[in-house]
Picture 1 (cartoon, rainbow, N blue to C red):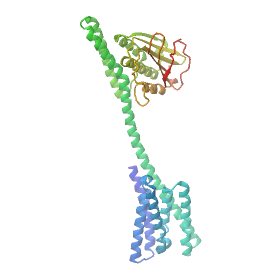
Picture 2 (picture 1 turned 90 degrees about the vertical axis):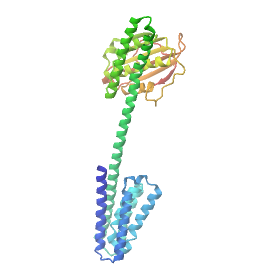
Picture 3 (picture 1 turned 45 degrees about the vertical axis):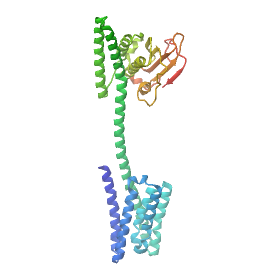
Picture 4 (picture 1 turned 45 degrees about the horizontal axis):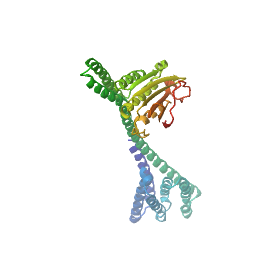
Length: 396
């Protein structure tokens, strides 16, 4: 509606200026031929001005623009021979087109020249100084009105297109969020369900009691997965790092991985944003361990130092075929890095070797303890004595 209204105002203003010129020509009591010629010229000028004032004119090829501009210039000055100064109002249209189609410096220079050009027919027609000043002023005003209304129409059209693009972008971002959250939240749950079902299959014949316990845990994990799906759909997905530590320990133990969990008591006072992001990191880390390694041990530590918390996941059995993170993947390590950056944290990945294991993978996530301090970067205040492995392949 706004685009049509702006376009309607522009067309109405152009029609009014053409009507004034036509009335001035009628006052000269011209013959049928001259009157018909005047109507044809007015119609052509009107059509050319509509073309030059259209929002899409910026996408028109340069040679086409110069051709139509030249045609409007001819229709502006040539009819002055027949109709005299009464045709001078059309110079305002031409001045506006110069401002619309040419670069700023050239356009404004030719705009001024077009305004002053009305002095020539005024002198040839022996007009008074007041009349000549009036004609120049009217030409300048008409040019500014044409330029202003045309630019307004173009800006309204651009705004309408921008709003449509923003709407499409919002939908795309929501689709990306949904895909990312499904990957981060459900990948871990589905892997855990698969592992526990495999364990249940082995235990049914030898240890039915233990199998029933594992079935109960599968039910808990499946209900949590269902709740995660609902939170993703609602856009709300707050998670607890403490709960995820307990769940990760259970899943790794069921997979036959020797796991050690070392946590700091201050982890309990994490802000909701940091706790959710670190819980997501833990889920992704454990999921990658189960999918992309043949780990025999895993050490998970969550330590608080100063106003930041560090979550570290170390495991052996890294497979060389494990794909690296891609900044454009929208999931995996690249996704975790972006999540941490959003709250003022960072992700550090080490792939290296130590004295006792050939292939070691170390994932470290640092985040603010309090959500209100999320704009501060991590500081080197951790003194837990952990070994930093040799080479950093990916640091976000």
